[in-house]
Amino acid sequence: MSHQVVTRLAAEGTATLEVLEALCLLALSDMIVGKPARAWMTVGTASRLQAFRTLSRPEPDNAHEDEDHESRCYWSIFILERAFAHQPGESGESDNAPKYPPSAPWPPPVHAQDSNSQTVGPPNLDEGLEDPGILAHCIEMISIWGDVCSSLGELRSGKAESPWLPNSIISRLSLRMHESEARFTSRHLLRNVALPGRSPLNCSSIKSTGHPGHLWR
Image (cartoon, rainbow, N blue to C red):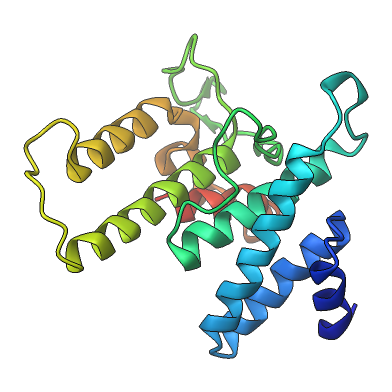
């Protein structure tokens, strides 16, 4: 769809996944060509349409068939809001938010074998800890850093507070960082990915899990 068509459909309140995805792509293209103001407007439009779509969704027993498509669209708008607008926006980590999009299957481990052909692998340090996937961890970290940028803007504008208080910006952000790191499972740590032991072809095949992991770090 052309820019004019997408803009017209968005202005008419057409909150389809195709329109929302097109708005995300337009926002990214505006950022690339150096038009941040138009990108902000586009992200804001996508966010409002997504909020309307979320509120008008049917009940869980009549949910959309393509939940994965819905989830990826929702969280794409969320990421654009936090990465570029540095504002909470309409999309967020609320009770109405869809589940995080599923991550790509984790690549099989590269086992080191000694002379007796005994398999050696990383220890299991995450028993009992649910792993939502590397995409979920990545989205959560983008959300935190979006809040960091937003808070820095408030401080630069002259908002005064005592950083040692439990409800201060730095205390709340530090708590979120610690909680996020506590939920991060060891299987995603760089030392357990074993990149040196993988062939170039194997490394290129795990980009879908590797890129979010590098961004999280």
